[in-house]
Image 1: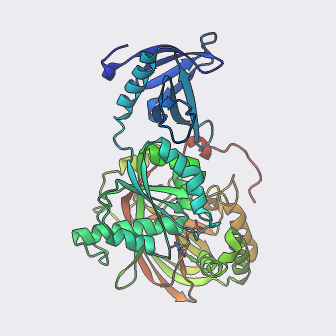
Image 2: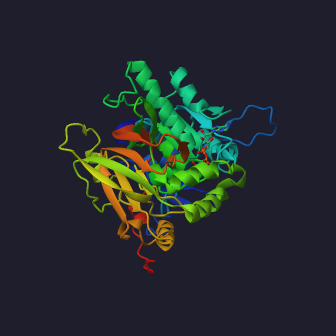
Image 3: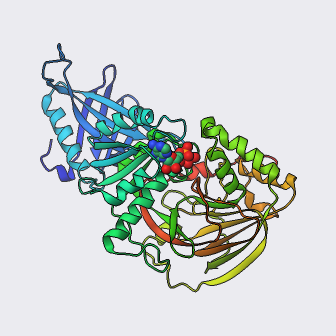
Length: 485
Ligand SMILES: Nc1ncnc2c1ncn2[C@@H]1O[C@H](COP(=O)(O)OP(=O)(O)OP(=O)(O)O)[C@@H](O)[C@H]1O
């Protein structure tokens, strides 16, 4: 065994109870096989290790101090066997020589310290009101045990009312935390980033109501553990609403940049949104379904149908400011080139121009991300990116009832998207303005109601930093073909 842990190579045969395993550590990877068949080899990259700990001996009495087991240690790690879901795993390795155990634990922990971006003290907000009202149980079952294994300190704050999370983040000291997170749906995530951005504006004396101001980037990264009804933001970022996956993304500490869109009326900033800002049909659904919260997530089905039948269309004018209005058919995924190339770019001095669209719409949606979720696997804007500085404006013309049904079927389809429907047009924008001309709906902002009708909005390129490695490419490549309704 070498003392030079920096360039360490370890090779030991451990027992795991029944089997003997030859275990090698080299080049930031652990490889193990069962000696007899090296084809059954498992490779564990160091970046997927949560922690490495020496085991404790089983103590006879709870009051007795726990003693370290000199002959056993455990590697806690995660893997993504298929699709977007990550799972937690552990392996207990046993050796008759104590020195072997100590060397492995010391060396692996030395190398794990290089992951300096992993959070250590997190402020976690739990919304007990959203979704199935089980956010606290989600935290207790999926978050708490893994955060403890990772050795993270978690300060839990359970929200007592709407906007409390936002107000807390604006006004309280966050000095002792290196990150914030939430267990909740899109409305909770929205409180989190609205609070963080306003906090930063306050700190730097930036007038948030002035659309021409550059909004300061919040210092703290955020973690998103889904615990709401639709959880669109979590789904688009992690590729799944699985809570274990979301917790592991926070523990890994890898980050990506998410665009936010700031929305204004004539005088002030109304809010920032991260997923969708939608007028017409979805605005009506948000308004109606909010009064039916007692129904849980089913309220969306009920309100959705009711508002579909009664929709008479809304006449309005949309102005789009863009340098690249055409949609490019590239899907956003982990290590997305389009988002990476925009990481440090300033989307200010581009050759943008205004274009105006006027008409009667079934709905107008500004999608900052694809808005995919389990009910809508491709989302309303399948080619919208997390961090490219553009928002996709999806204009759905007022048309027949049958076409509205076609739209909703497409939205719930795994195989086809709304983009190819003849009454749907998508444009990419850096800014946009909307003015109602006849009839007025509300806006639906990340699932929350925004009552002002006439608005202006501006994309803020990668204003938010999120804990995630992104969703994998495989999840988007769906080879199954079926009839496109
Ligand atoms: N203690 C609380 N009591 C009442 N409302 C709360 C409380 N804490 C947060 N809220 C508000 O609850 C609303 C709903 O929360 P959230 O969006 O997380 O759940 P959801 O609407 O069920 O999920 P989704 O937005 O993913 O569909 C948000 O507007 C949030 O501001």
